[in-house]
Image 1 (cartoon, rainbow, N blue to C red):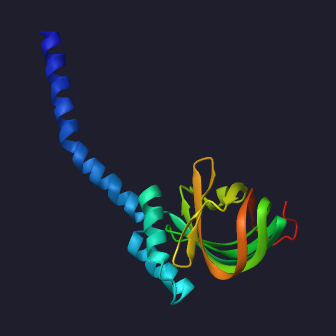
Image 2 (image 1 turned 180 degrees about the horizontal axis):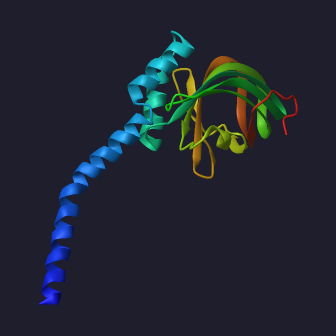
Image 3 (image 1 turned 180 degrees about the vertical axis):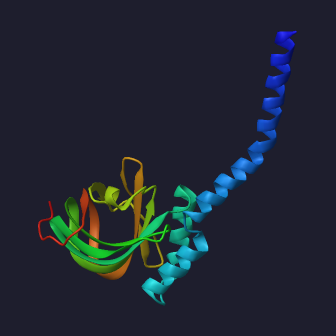
Length: 194
């Protein structure tokens, strides 16, 4: 008799869990949506940041959303760089988290490769899986030259641990080639690229 009661109790618990699962999943998705940016909002903010003339921007953002989903933050900034085989990149901007916090960010980094030229650009970086802003301040491996490019806007990815950064660049200058290096995100401005 005891075994039957336990089996009935287990069956009732399982049925209750199965009935509650869709509601729990919907609530989790809602919470996730509240902590991340939707595609239309990102396109609107990025277009406002870059201004008119960024016709390829929507396609670049769509690609990032398709590959990585909804970001929980973004950085609006500017950067400049140049290279003759060995290159340097410097930038600064503001990190905006969906949770409402903002923070000043600087970045710099060296690169080496088949790279020649100089450029200055506005940058809009999609930020994925950043649990707190302190996690941003570290080095992220960077590979340029193997990025998606359409209509004047380009995107590549920087990954470290579970965090993914997707810089979208739109700017002026002439720089061609491929390089590897890293980008070091810091709290304060520094001239030291290492």
